[in-house]
Image (cartoon, rainbow, N blue to C red; front, side, top):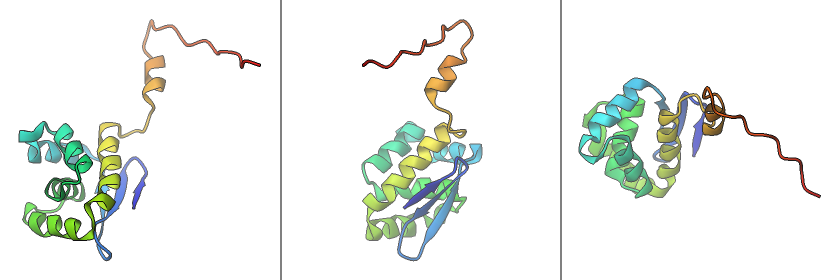
Length: 125
């Protein structure tokens, strides 16, 4: 289960444990440190995409501001609950960190000075 509001994502890691992950520069920097040997944010995304409870625990620790001492317990909790259930909200969270305002890439591309605007295409009959 995930709820994202471009500031927070709630992620359930067990029947009784839900964490609110904050979309902050501090969380992004912490993920970069925890995944420094795995290419930072790319490594975090890969951990979630590969349903790796150890890597997913690192993302939760960074986003929720937990101590790393929680890592082993949290990884075991994620494994027991089902890594596939935790992966989707973590992927949403990592995407939110990389785009904290939620603006579409196309919207930003249209703001580039000197770039011609797309012309509206009339609907075909």
